[in-house]
Amino acid sequence: MKRIEQIVAIFIAAGLSIPSYWFFWTLAGGGGYEKRVKPTIEKNSSKILKSSSNFNKP
Image: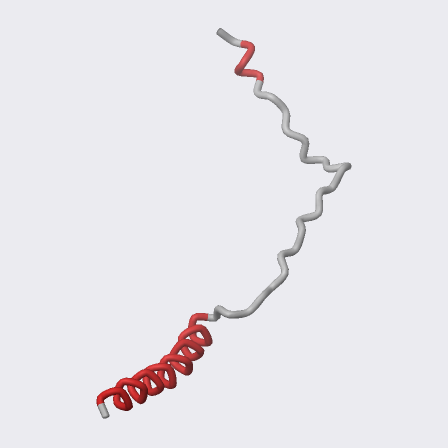
């Protein structure tokens, strides 16, 4: 009889944990897959970095 109670307890725990896990990830906004977008690099950019003129002074 004790063995049946243990098996029932495991099924109840699993039955409660699955919806709890799903509900948590739904609220947290996780669980989905969003493909990352590759940033585009402009080759003819007018924002070229120039070295500071302060490096030439002692």
